[in-house]
Amino acid sequence: MSLDLERSYRRARGAIAVLAVCVLTAGALACSGAPAAEEDAAAPIAVETPAAGPAAGTAAPAQAPPVPQKQFPPQDHLNKIVAAYNVANQYPEVLTGLPCYCPCELYGHGSVIDCHRSQHAAMCDICMDEAIEAGQIYQQQLANGVDDIAAAQAQVKDRYRRAVVAQRAQQFPMMNTQQGRAFLQACSDCHQPPHPGMHLPGDWDASLARMEQYARGKGLMQSDQVWQAALEYVSMVSAQVPASTIVQYRQNLETTVEHLKHAEGDAAYYPSVRDPVLDPAWAERVAAAYNAARALPAELLASTPTACQECLDAGNTNILACLNAWQAITCETAIEEVEKLVAEHEQNQ
Ligand code: HEC
Image (cartoon, rainbow, N blue to C red; front, side, top):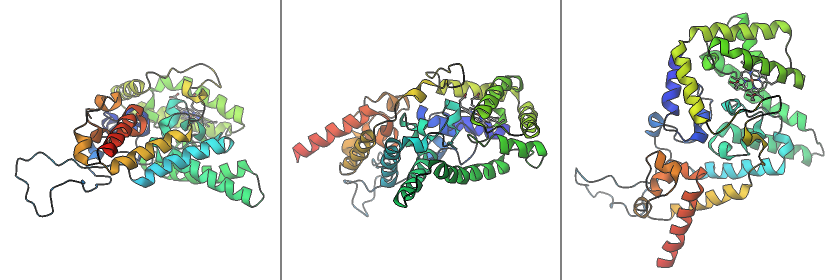
C-alpha cells in the first residue's frame, strides 16, 4: 500500500505539471503516453537514426560524447492529439458528463470534456481514447439516423469503468470484502476509484460529503448500505497507510496543482473547468512542428538552446532535449523555436 504511494511520488517527481496528475495515483491505467519520469525514461519511445550520425561500422572513440538522438513522440500519438481535440470541439456535448477514468478528478475535472479545456488530454491516453471512441460511436449513430448521446456515453463509460475496476481489484487491499466491493461500485461511477491513502482518515469527511452531494445531484446515489460500506472501506484502508506517507503524498499533489485553487460549492471546480475547449489548431501546429523537426539534423536541434521554461525547469536546455522529453507538446515557446529553426534551415538550403 505505502509502497504504491512511494512509487507514485518517485514517478511524479520530475514529470511536468500536466503529466504529474496522470501518475500521481498508483497503477498502470493512470494516464500514460509520455516518458513520465526517470524510471520510465530509460525505455526509448521511438529512436530515430540521426540524420548526420556516424556511418555504420564507424567505431566511436571510447570517450566520445553521445551522439544526439531524436526520440520524438510517435506520429500516431501526435495524430491522436489532433483527433481528440477535434472531437471535443465538434461534439462537446458527447464528452460532457462522460466520466474520465484517468485520475483527473484530483484536478477537479468532472468529465472528459474538462480534460480538453487545457493541454491535459494531450498527455493522457485515457482522456484521448475515451474522447475519440465516444466521437466514433456518436458519428456511427448519426450515420444510421440515430442521435442518442446517453447511449454513446454509456458504452464508453462501461468499457473504461470495467477496466479500471478490474485493475483496482488487483491493486487495492481487502477487495474481497463487502466494503471493498461497495467501494469499487460506488466510487467508480464518476471517476477511477481513488487511492484511500489520498487523505488522512479525518480529512476524508469533507470530500466524501461532496461526493454524496454529486451523486444525489446526478441521481446516481447508491443504496445507503452500499454507500456506507464504501465509506467504511475508505476509512479502514486510509487508517492503515502511515500518516507521514499521506502527508508527503498530499504535499506532492498540492505542489502540482498549486496554481489551481479549489472553489466552494457544487458546480465550482478548478478554474480550468470553466475555460473553453482548446482549438484543435493548437494540436495541428504541434504535430506540424514535430514533423518538420524530424527532417532537421539532430545536431542542429541539440545545439540550439531553448527558452521554454518548462523544459529548462526539467533540465532540458536545448530544443532536442525539449522535443525528446515530449515537453514541447505543451510548450508554445519550444514550438515557436522549432518553427523558426525550420524556416532558417530552409533558407540556408
Ligand atoms: C456522482 C459522481 C461521483 C461519485 C459517485 C464519486 N465522486 Fe469523487 N469526485 C467527483 C467529482 C465531480 C470530482 C471533482 C470535483 C471535486 O473534487 O469536487 C471528484 C473528486 C474526487 C476526489 C479528489 C478531490 C478530493 O476531495 O480529494 C477524490 C479523492 C474522490 N472524488 C473520491 C471519491 C470516493 C472515495 C468516492 C466513493 C465513495 C467518490 N469519489 C464517488 C464525483 C464523484
